Each structure stands twice: as C-alpha cells, then as structure tokens.
Image (cartoon, rainbow, N blue to C red; front, side, top):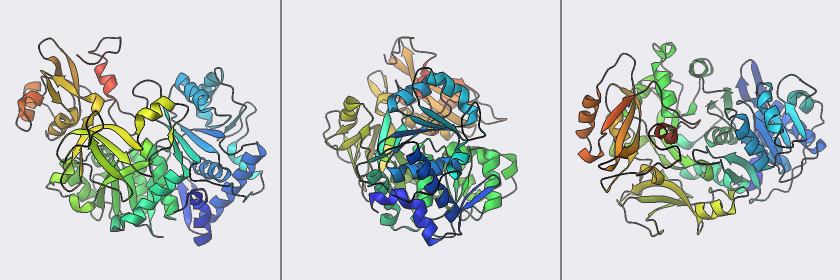
Length: 521
C-alpha cells in the first residue's frame, strides 16, 4: 500500500461501493459517496482558510463523523491532524495547542470553556465549532457544505506527517508522536501480509468504532475499517449501554476493545440474556484477557475469533498479535503473553546497554519497523532516546520464547526492587486477577524500612464478594514466589486509568511517596 493511498481511503471506497453505508451514528447514516463528497468540500474549506502542507489542524471533541471527514481532508491537503484528548484540563490543552503550533482548531461547543482558557495562553487564529454557531463561531458542517468540492490531492510523500498524537503523559508533559503517511500505510498493509482469516475484511463487515479517536487504538481502527471498505457503527464514547445497543441493532462483525470494557459489558444487565452471534472477530488490547473474562466472552460471542493486540502510539498501534488459535477457555501458555510480531516488525530484547539477549532472558523490548514513528514533535533529545539505531525503545520489560512470542512483565521504569530482588508488578497482577473475588487490581512498590520497597496490591472486589488481605496474600503465594507476593492489600472502588485502559500507577503511588516526586527507595 503506497503512502498516498492513506489520503484516498474514502475516495477508493466511494469508487468501489458508492452506495455502501460508510458510517452509522445516532440517527445519521452516510454512504461512502456522501462521505467522500463531504471530505472534498472540507478540502475546499481548508484551502479557503489557507491551510498548507505540514500545517497543524486541531480536533477537540468526541468520536464523530466530523473527525473522520477532517482527518481525510487534512491528509489530502498534506496537513497534520492533531487529535486532542477532550478529557484534559484547560492548561493541558493549552500546552498541546502551543507545543503543536495549531492555528486552526475544530472544537465541540461543550469544550468551548476549555478553549477560551487555552486561547488565553496560545494564539489561535480560527476556531470552528462542530455544533450550532455560538459567539460568532461558525458550525463545522455548515462551513463544509458551503464549499465546492476540491478533488486536488497534494503531493504526498511517505515521510510527511499525517497525525500528531500525544502520549498519555503519565510522566511530565505529553509528547507529540509524529506518524507519517508511510507509517500508516505500512500499518494498514500488515493485515494483508498476515493472510490469516481473522485479518481479512470484506463488504459484509460492520465494525464497531467506540474507542477514543484521539487515541491510536481508535484512530487506527477507524483507518482499518475505511481501508476495508466496511460499514462503521460509530459511537461518541465507549458507553456500555450504547455498545450493547449497537451489537444488537447493527449486526457488528468486528470490534476492538480493552478487556476492561469487555468485562463491563459482560456484567451489564442488558447483556445478561442475549448473545451476539454476528461477531466474527473480537480484537482486544492494552492488557491480557483473564480466563474468566475470556470464557464469558466466548459464551457471549459464540462465533468470534479472539485476537490480542500489542503496540503503542509510537508504532501506529499494533505490532504484535496473539492469533485465535492461541486462545482457549481452559487457557494456554501463550495467553500469558502478547503474541508474535507483524510481518514487517523486527523485535529484540536487550539489556541496558542495548545488547541483544537470548530467548527467556528479561530485558527491554525494542522494535524496528516501517510502522515506527518519525519522532517526537520538536523534541530531538527525546527522539534520540526513543529511537536508537532505528530501534524503538518501548520501555517495556519482557522476554521472547524460542518461537519468537513476546511476553511482557512490566514497564522497565515500573520495576519494584525489594531486598535486592527485582519484582515486576504485571506478574503479581496476573496472579491477583485469578482470585475469584477480584474484579481489578494494580500493584506498586511502597517505601519499606527493611526491604527498601515493599509490594502493595490495590484491589477492586467484585460486587457482593469479600476477601481479606490475608486471604489474598495467601492466594498469591500459591502462584508466585513468596518474595513477589504483596506485603499489604488496600481496597478501592475503582482504579485510575488513562483512555487506553492502562492503570495510572503514578496516581496510585502518590499516597505513599514523598511530594518531591521520588518513587523509588
């Protein structure tokens, strides 16, 4: 797939199947022909506003048709779309607007107060609202429909940035990962190269797009559906009620979700007495799926193939996958890991000096691939640290087995050192997750006079279930070495997570570590 084809995904679908439903959202349904017309009119709007190649266009809002239109129009003119997490506070939004150099911002009315605050710190020449006009701002759709279609395609090069997505910012300020047309084209080509049944798309596919489009999981899934010329049931947020309604009403055949969303879906009363036989491929990521959730999911989606995905914003999303044959209700050894690399992905495990380690040895996961980002926007030092000799340093600690399957133990920086022993929280969390009373858990290191650091488990119990710290610790000690087991257990109602479903360990640690930010002993 050539880089220029990223900018013409909707055009290609409109030529092949003009009357096929492209997007279904709320009461609105657009065919690929109608969607393509709006994209070309949006191109006309962007050029009318003076948008040039490499210019930054911001989008601040929920998942929407507007986002899809703006993304493809920006790609056609060679501009860079900066998708902003709408959950951020105004100072965080202001930082991204300033860092990215956004001149044109498309925002929802609901975010206007945050935009006002941010504009006090950043000069933005134009704001267009996605909803009805307000305070002199035009409505995005009105502005688009007022333009004549502009079919001219910019001279797209593979190294031109297409998306600028900001990392979650769990430490310090977020970094804008630059994903090029070439990166995205290589990413979308992997399903074709895999040539496995689960990776195929056809005209009967209906994809559920519910994960946030400001995150790589949501935007990559959107692009994959467009490339597959599939219909998309587009949800503004991953609301469980809305997901269940879409599954029931639209005959969804493909879905991507994090295990936490699947777990909530399975526990929802609306899903109690129904199954979803239309589902053919159920893809999940951000964390492994527990056996109880897998078992219940297989019963709820009886015809679905389950595939685990591993990747990062910096790698255009998925680079490693665990195929359906490695999933089983009774569990398989490989389900403890992430899977095997995509065809165009090289993977190695290294020590701190960058030397490659043999199978079974734990070290940092590094990747080399055309899917890996160009770098971080305006951060040459951070780019040099992340990309060493063209290998991307993931910051994840893990190992590969003799068959090349990847197993993660934790983030390199999230390691606990207790009594000179290295303990990886993910291993403890996996043991905790098997407890029948535990719904969710996170493991951190806390200061300890004797050992330097001690393992603490933060646990969410299932409704109606009970367990004591002593019972949980004894349960874990039956599954992993005693020194790895929690020394203490705290109970909470919910764990803090970012939009991709990852636990915010920094938030968990805050209660126990000094205010100066030091989080190791």
